Amino acid sequence: MSSAEPTTDRSELAQAQATWDAIDIDRVRDVAWTAIPYFMERNLARLGGPDPHTRVRTLLAERVPAERHHALVGGVLLCGDMRGEAPLFRSADDLSFDHVDGFDLSPTSLERVDASGIPFEGHVADCNTLELEEDRYDLLIGHHGIHHVMELGHLFAQAHKGLRSTGLLAMDEWIGPPFLQLPRRNAFFTRLLLFALYPKPRSRTNHMGQRKGVWLAPPPEAFDPSEACNSDALLPEYHRHFEPVAEVRYGGLTYPVFEGIAHTIDMGRWTNKLRVRIVYLAERVLTAVGLVKPLFVSSIGRPRRDAATPGEGAAS
Image (cartoon, rainbow, N blue to C red):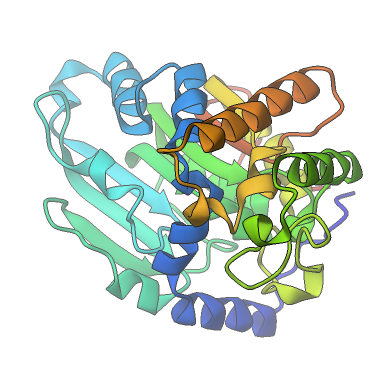
């Protein structure tokens, strides 16, 4: 049983929608740990490509029949403003999309979508109960949105149903504890690194004025009810329906150390470059020996032939 029970309480979904209608997503991106390019560059290299778009498109071109390369259909689950996903769907010599569906609970997020160069159609939809047309899609994307879904088994079953047999699901998602909490060992090593590398409190004070090390993460009640609400079940349900073609798990230390202070890190200074590399190396080593748990996954998966049929995918 997952430590966070899935729910379809409509009042909770309304609260989640209100949060994403009002959030300043650009500010969130500015202070996020991923604003330090070094981490994503290393993780993408481990995934097998210079950037996520090239890797996905290359794998898709290998699977989809040549006659469909310029008549593809795409879909984005919990698409938000499509900032991270949109470049993947823009036409190029290798592949082009005839249609791209975007699904999101927040109408305001859909209004923010910059769909220039994309045949995009937005749909206000609850991905807990989403029903996809069978064999419609060549590519489905989940970019830091799937961990907001309470009924993960249903969503992955629908993604499996909606994809053609030659299609792919690509996702970047939180797989740590529910409500963005940190495992105890991750928190222990995070504090060691913060106090050792940034002994002056001012240098580890985040964008909200909190001193990292003493403080690491907000309590569960600080988040909207959908935030990583059932994240313990995300990878098991995904692997139940999809077979990874490429997969990397990461972020066990780099996320908690640099989230909220990334915008203060001047990578033009050699001291900061050294600190960033120390944290990244510590994460790789401690994760490899099992002392730190990865908190994120980047995965590109193909539909499993032996997957559960839609309606049989509820988390248990």
